[in-house]
Length: 383
Image (cartoon, rainbow, N blue to C red; front, side, top):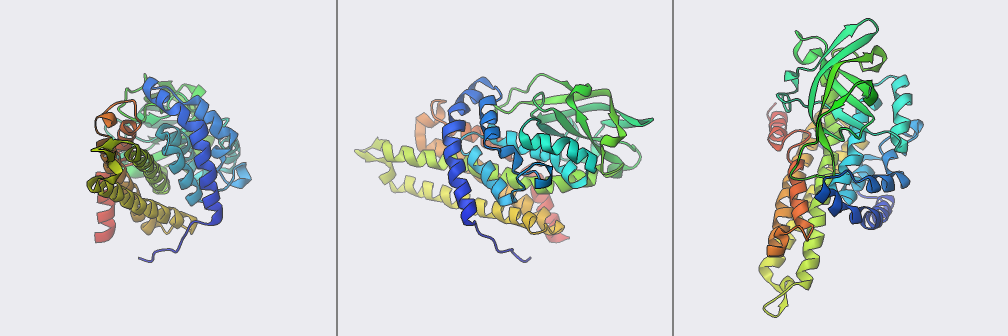
């Protein structure tokens, strides 16, 4: 395997500095309330729109900034460093639009991409079902041809931004006898009859609404079929390969937030007459946390650079799985250690490290559990 050479440019570094100040000034003040009340962080999203952040992942020809994947990873990381819910809000619309960008007709691109880039429109990605999460081929949602339309029926579970999004990218079976080759992909406007269930009461990422969405013979024009009939499984896997590295960057951001807060606390908290930062055992814990997260960050950037440099499919599938898996495991371990470093205070909601720990958990689960990522990695290694 040939590792591509990459390094942050001065533009990347300046962008990080700008975004870090923005996140601390405009996003962090809303984070605790969004988590406590389990409410969508509208103020934070509006601030991101002011800074034109939704445009980063959209091509220039459709009103976006056309930023490279490393820049997008930096954005996800810096937002997650203060509020993981806001970070995923920006990531989910890009996820919903990736099938349109890579497989959609010119008409669909012109119809949706500029609105997402401007922040006028948000999107959700509807793949998972109650019995078809990691096993995508087991999905039961159906799309039946009816003249020039399809009638879409079924329920998708664990849908991020449900009820907030204006459009939903939905995977459904068009040929029940063809297995994974019978899955197709559609883009569906919310006002065509999308029904949203009550929101899930989640452990973490509480500012990001998650719910089941249902379709009861929702009429979808054939023009809103993405790619072609039977292309859905290929589109889904292609999309997740290009999205998982940014979930890794979200995890890195959560971990960095925990590291930064724990380091500051250690310098202020005193025990035995001196700051606990002077205790070697605790210093070594912090050093280990930082080492692991820097390794995760580097792996995420490598995966992003593969996409920026033409994304050779086999290599990206494996490295993207590695980046998502390692970074999310790191976020869980680092945030747990941060709670430990704060002692009893870390166990209270008065300090953000317990929120970081709760938020970190979902990064090990969504867009493919880490057990599934290990299956993907092993399969690529063993052939």
